[in-house]
Amino acid sequence: MATIRPIIVLCILLLAKSASCEPPTKLRLATTDWCPYACKQNGASSGIVYEYVSEVLADVGVQPEITFYPWTRAIRESEKGSVDGLLTAVQEEAPHLLMSREPIMNFQMCFLSRDDKRWQYDGQESLEKINLGVISDYSYGEPLDSYLNSPRSDSKVYVVTGANAVERLFEMLKRGRVDAIADDSKVLQWQAKKLKLNIKKFHQSGCMESHPFYIGIDPRLPWAREILEIFDAKFSDPTNRELLDRIVEKYL
Picture 1 (cartoon, helix red, strand yellow):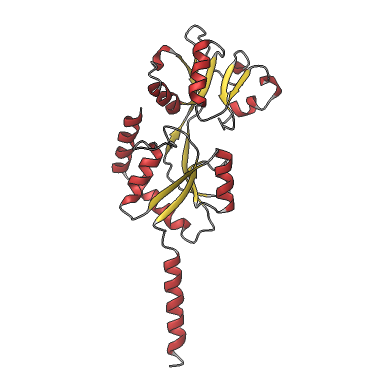
Picture 2: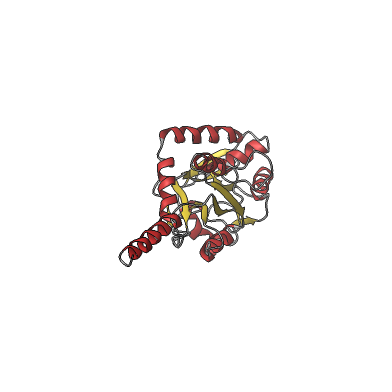
């Protein structure tokens, strides 16, 4: 009996460790209201990424539980461990998280200008020639973020806040209060569709570099790497990429 007991204890410990690495049935992810990627509203439309992640996790018995915050708070909540991770993450903004190797999809910041302005984005210096509408507490990436944080932009940039910020940007552009607005290309398309605007009536004034975003998971969780391996397998599956294309088409 004395020689059997250590073996039994070892088996129990190994089983306990194995069980602790099993992903949970509910995955708590924070995000921000970023339609059409993630939309804080009731009804069937909950956003491209929200729907996509829900679909790809369904056959492994994991249900995403999404909580919406202002983006800086969403990052803080993931740092504190009050959520399991971020639904739409980039390493630069959340270096404390483990990221999936495979991206969910790409985002790209673009500019729309008034048709009569015909301004074209060509690096940071070109931004100084216009009045630009942007959203508060929003990371656009470089070089726009550096320009927005510099004294040179003080009299040339108009900042909007609130849940209907993109709608207000379009209104400012239509009324000529700004010469151009900046946002992600799919956000601009989705908002124009929602407002029943023909986006082709505006001048597409160029884009910054396209960037991928990922699922980010708290590395302190014992099953963090296991759930990320599931995401990597799902996101690299061609069938699921076709599913994503269909979801995108539905929103845009």
